[in-house]
Image 1 (tube, helix red, strand yellow):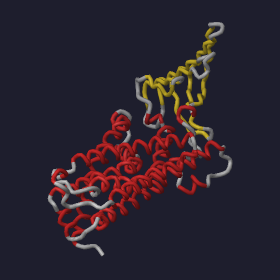
Image 2 (cartoon, one colour):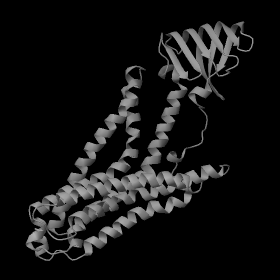
Image 3 (cartoon, rainbow, N blue to C red):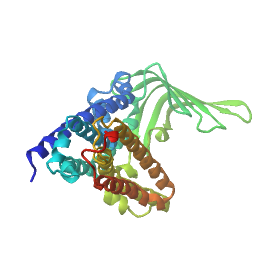
Image 4 (cartoon, helix red, strand yellow):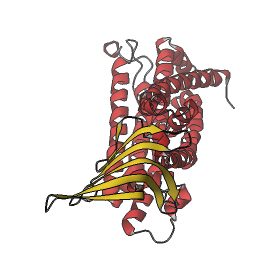
Length: 368
């Protein structure tokens, strides 16, 4: 049963967590969405597509931001209570560390459930939608990539120029330089054409033009005049048919029990992705343990806890960096997967030992 004091602290921690989460999310969303502004400003895509694309990348960042937001909120809230001597008063009436932590732990359990919801469902759902939209935009690059009167570098070996685009997707004044065959690069010039989708991928169909091919061995240029010619561009845009889902697009059951026909390396990568999804939310209670280890362990100090807070921030940053490093190590050595779980568990146990040590409310004068 929660007391009025518990509800008071839980409300403060919740509001502070939401505030920090909102600010960090807005900042990261703004920085990431700048990558997609060009699609709207220069490529003519509707603003709804820009909003959809930029929103789909948010779950990936929320999984990282959520532990940080709760950590900052607990430090801010409990340090304020300490500065106002509210925690001192609660300790004086017999409230132990477990009772003082109870409201924040309740908020942490809600955040932990949200974290697992993001990693197990929100993350693969958003990535799947993002990749599908990305593939759709690439396959329809006549509307996305091409600009009238501009040489468009579709990839390192294919350049396309279009003088004018018609309302029905028709292209006029086409020039293509194709160096995918480095020995015999070719240049195509056509009066008009269009891009169509075939079962094997997108194709550029050109009408009434010529093909100029250079033989680098002899230095001779050969000409071919055509009424109709097709250029394969599926290497640029990607296949439009069924594609193999990446690890970030798969749900947990698809990671642990993938379909048949995958090689051992791919299966290992999917297994590591599954364990990263399961281990990442454990940073939420780990960060909470770091905050409480700094605020509630040791003797009460009237001069404040600036040094402890600074150390807690450094430990949290080090923990986050170490988790990323272990994730990279796990991609190379599957045996390191267990370290993803041991890291947050070790932090929680270590902080619990510090908090459980008896503290003095009124330490000797030299400690005040």
